[in-house]
Length: 376
Ligand SMILES: CC(=O)SCCNC(=O)CCNC(=O)[C@H](O)C(C)(C)COP(=O)(O)OP(=O)(O)OC[C@H]1O[C@@H](n2cnc3c(N)ncnc32)[C@H](O)[C@@H]1OP(=O)(O)O
Ligand SMILES: O=C([O-])CC(=O)C(=O)O
Image (cartoon, rainbow, N blue to C red; front, side, top):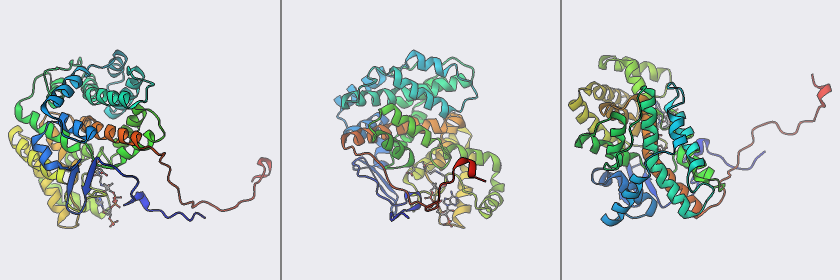
């Protein structure tokens, strides 16, 4: 029998060191490179946060101009990647389309095969620039429409909404979407980032690491929960039905999507900010019912259990108010989290040791071998 101690789900296990992101789960604080996410949320562009996560410091205006100019020039997709996205069946799950497009993009990356730091930094930039184009192009395909080419005059947040809807967004929706991207950019060793680091730690390439991460993000216990919250709202239907629906779900020990967190033992600070946007945008766009139902769910749950909303609880209602279809909520998470994944992959390459934990063996101990013809 193994002498190795184990914690189910690796709860509270410290699996590495990182300079990128700090979470105070008791106080409900999220910090990127020393900056509280509440300060960054209202005052920075997503591009500044990408720079911060990668470089460790906020850029000067000149550095930011150079950085965004390069990012904007990298938005168009390689032709085979574009062709893939407009040819897979429209019924394809958008996360599957994104995972496959990212994997294919790795083959056509001009730095493919080069695992130097500089090449990986350029690959990371291409992915931050191109994942929005991939997600929007596939959404147009799903709708039976022609993809819209990126507009290099627009910020990353504005350009994504433009590629989705075919018109430049108003200032407030673009600001809200930018803030959502800032809030989702990194979160320490969450499941998808851990998957990315495990792959990178074998010294596999950056695209393989990001493909691993996308697969992990898709699951409903992680990034996929934001879509499940909207499915739950549709199932409940009316604010008046919330109490009964939640009572039944809890009695059946069902997990309420968008609630609970491995690290936060209080409200997720990102949920607090997104709740305000959910209400504001809900009032402005006639989608306030989503917010009202979410608040009724929160009150019902919190009257029974010390459980708190996480980032996925309100994000869908914000995206719905921005005209983003439910099936895109998790891909939109990837549009932002690519910043954190790549920051962690680059950090892993800089101080690498293969990640290889142990398992506590719970199978049978010694058994006598029986030749094939003697087995019953
Ligand atoms: C971006 C993100 O990934 S944020 C997370 C998104 N995921 C979700 O919203 C899915 C719903 N939530 C969950 O499944 C979980 O809370 C997770 C996966 C986020 C965290 O899981 P864990 O840290 O393993 O917590 P665990 O499942 O052990 O829950 C601890 C206790 O809280 C309860 N609990 C946790 N989350 C929920 C929930 N969403 N609904 C109901 N009860 C819950 C559990 O039943 C358990 O209760 P018990 O001790 O009486 O058995
Ligand atoms: O940290 C986690 O486990 C999940 C999460 O909130 C995130 O990835 O943003």
